[in-house]
Figure 1 (tube, rainbow, N blue to C red):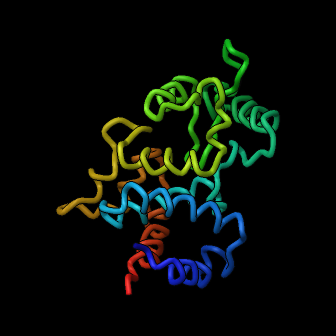
Figure 2 (cartoon, helix red, strand yellow):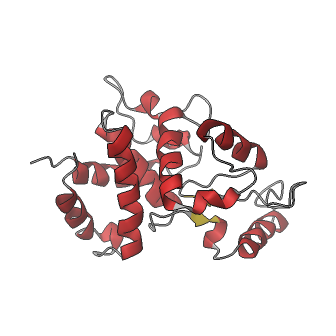
Length: 203
């Protein structure tokens, strides 16, 4: 079990969190820890550390599910993606309404995008993400998606935590490929090692 007092005291001592944690940050992190300890605590602690770091990066440190562009409304998220498309940052406006009128822009702690991916999540978790994509904004529901997504490699086939952390592998930088093949691997690896230090205290 994670020593939560030490864990949160450690995080509050980091510049990573500006030496303090808001109630939302604590609540969102607690949902992740609860989900992990309920079903996945037998796995490698490095896995949890990396999940927390990945979530930190994807949510801008908020540790809770967010809409794309950190928008507060559905309309705001759609507008954000439209601006990316108009500026040539993305090749398709994936926030454009699908046939059912819903928009499948990024939601959750790890930005789940595209209609087909919401369908895939629905099949895996047995929840109606396709007809109700905002379920990914529910912190407890999304905590499971975020954890399982990293463990099983849901977002990018062949890229799961077991590939990067096992008895022979300790690839903190390469693990970024689980979510996105971008250039943030080294930065997130640094975050992950701090989270690993926070969860490694067991006394």
